[in-house]
Image (tube, rainbow, N blue to C red; front, side, top):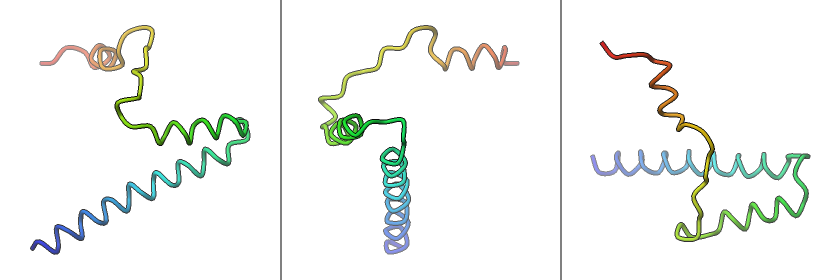
Length: 74
């Protein structure tokens, strides 16, 4: 049983790793980004969590918009 769980975790990690690498490859192939922008994005990915700054978004949070669109719960 433990081996099955371990294989499942490995497969899950492999899937996330594959998706991450695919995202990086798409970013590097994007012709809209300059080489300097790509370099900065790669450097930012290496930052520890403590160095990330929160994103400030104008307007209502998307969760509130979804709740309003869904309508009242019955």
